[in-house]
Amino acid sequence: MHLWLASALARAGRIEKAEKYLVGVLDCANDLGLLAEEIDPDTGELLGNFPQGFSHLGVISAALNLAYAHSGADAPWPPQR
Image 1 (tube, rainbow, N blue to C red):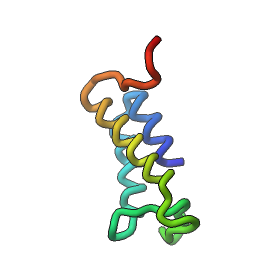
Image 2: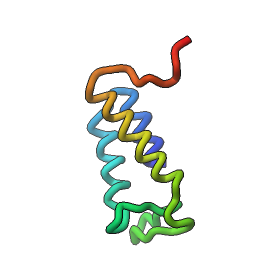
Image 3: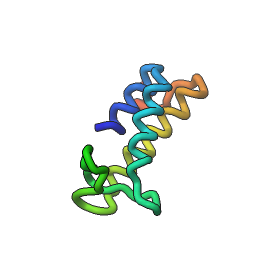
Image 4: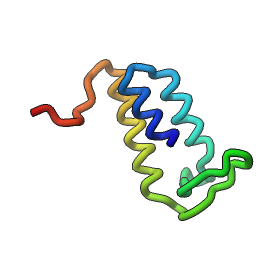
């Protein structure tokens, strides 16, 4: 949820808040930078499938949206017709 929210906030121009959510998720990664399917909000324990590819796709998406927001350029998606 936080990664989706970080992407949405970045696309809405709320860069600082988007960075806060992205960094919060990255702080939960293990020593190799891997994420699980879920994170226990109380303990930070990684739960579910590990490593989880969809979590990493969310990180990439949020980072790309933040990069576009920082550059002032429009993200290339959704494609314009």
